[in-house]
Image 1 (cartoon, helix red, strand yellow):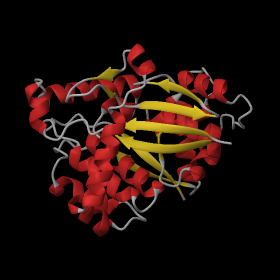
Image 2 (tube, one colour):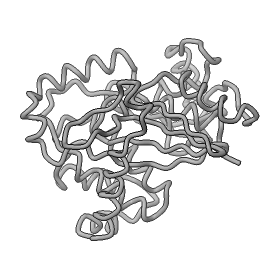
Image 3 (cartoon, one colour):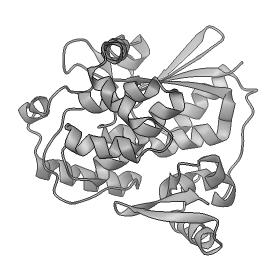
Length: 288
């Protein structure tokens, strides 16, 4: 029996974006042993909520530099237009999810990449519609129409309510927030459930913390070990960025070697087995 993982997240959260390599590592290591479900937090409905907290375009650009240098995900350091509410992007993910879990996850990942490599405010259809239409395999017109669909709104509000029903261990870890009423999970928070037991890894955590939760819930779960991009890229048809490839290459508790990963990826491109798409200060590497 697989371990259930509830992933509380938001497309506009830099901490959640910075945890993408950890999620790819969990998907690679445990495969179908983990059964994922995503809950959209809905951090803010409007940019004004961030403006009231003192957020500015130049400050957010500086934060992008800090996150880039610490976590190595692709970022743009072009001056950001300013803060943006995340409600519209969250609703689009919920709308896409009606076409299947993978459709929702594909759009969520595309929104993350755009949010942090494009300085535009991501709270209008002018900016968000091209992102939706860039995702292959989903019906973009239906996803966009979902913004006016009462079912999508009800599902989104259910997500928001679930994200604001916090398990006590999350509070004990100091990884919750109270920005719009009830206490809520911060992104990314993972709730692991198996055989009547629940373990909570709230907020940004190390990959080791997730491994410890999984090992305590089911030490018999089959695992895959480290592998190079010749093996990992085909398992992720929508691509991996360099730091994700590097993490999948290294043994547990080792530090990822970004240079070695990039060299291996260049070799794959030269051999016609991968394609490089520039993304922010880095690239998205796609299998061929």
